[in-house]
Length: 104
Image (cartoon, rainbow, N blue to C red; front, side, top):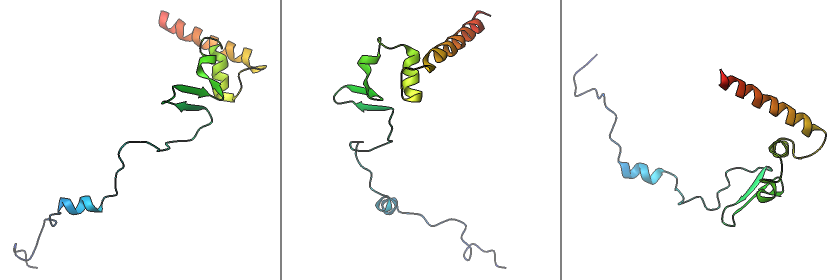
C-alpha cells in the first residue's frame, strides 16, 4: 500500500459558496399569507385589532365572564352548563393548594 501524499488526499474538495446558494430553495420575504396552523379556538385579525375566541369577541369575555367559564369555553367549546360549578371548585381548590405552598 502506497502512503505518499501524491496518491492520497485526506481533504474534501472545496465548495464554491455561490454554487451552494444557487441550489438552495428561494426564501420569501416576510410572512404575509403564510398559514402556520388552523384552529377552531381563536381567530386573530391583527390588522383589524380583533381577537375572537370560539366565536366570542374578546371584549365581551374580558371582565364580563368568569375565568373558569373562559377555561371551559377553551377546553370544551362551551361556557355554561352543569360542569361549570365543578370546574370552579376544582380550580379554586388548586389555587388554595398553591397559596398554602407559598406560606411555608
